[in-house]
Length: 246
Image 1 (cartoon, one colour):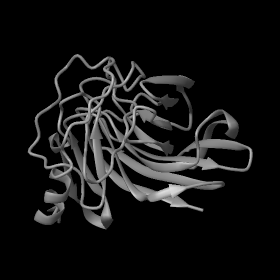
Image 2 (cartoon, rainbow, N blue to C red):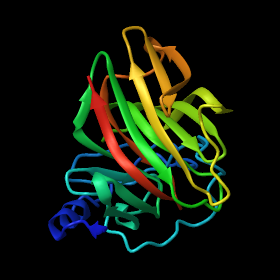
Image 3 (spheres, rainbow, N blue to C red):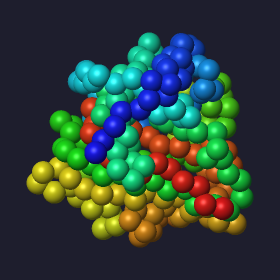
Image 4 (spheres, rainbow, N blue to C red):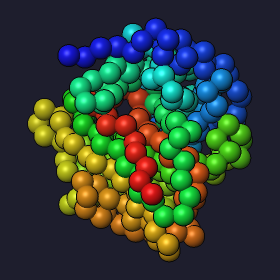
C-alpha cells in the first residue's frame, strides 16, 4: 500500500524552494545542479539529450517536492520543485511523477576514490517523447555557477548518454548510443534499468542491469563528490533510491 510523505517531510522539501539565478540555456533535462537543504533553486541546461528538446509543457501534478532528507532542483528558472510528485512505495521505493525535470540528492551520498553508485528505475508508462533518467556522480560546487558533475542516463528506446556538467555548459563523453545492455521498453512502455557507475583506480565503468555499456578514463570525468538521481520531465517511474558502496 502506498503512502504519501509526512507533513514534516513535505514541509522540509517545500521550504527548499527559493530561487537562485543562474545562466539560462536550452533545457533538455539531462543535467541540473543540487543545492543546500535550505534553498532549492531552478536552473536550465544546455541541449543534452534527455529526449527531444522539451517544447511540451511540464505536466501538472499534485506533488509537494522531494522526500524529507533530500534536496531537489529543477532545470528551468522559476519552476518550483513542488511540481514533482514523490510518493513512498513498497520496499522503500519512490514513485515519481513529473512535472519538471530535476535532480535529487542527499549529502550522505558522497564518495571519493573507488566506489559504486547505483539506482534502479522502473518506467511505468511510455512518455509522450523519449525522456531520460539515471544518476550523477562527482558533484562539486552544486549550489554555485561553477557546478560540476558527471551524469549517466538511459531512455526507453534502449540508449544511454554520458555527459559532464561544467558550469553553464556540458561536455559530451558518450553521445546517445544503443546498447544490448539497455533494454527497450515493452509495448506498454514498461522497462527496468539498474543504472550504475563503478569508479575504480584508473577508470569508470558504466553499467545497466549489471552489464557494462562503456568505460572511460577516471581522469576524464569528475568522480569525487556527491552522487544523486536524475529524472526528466513528464515521466512516471518507480525508483529504488541511489546507494553508494565504497
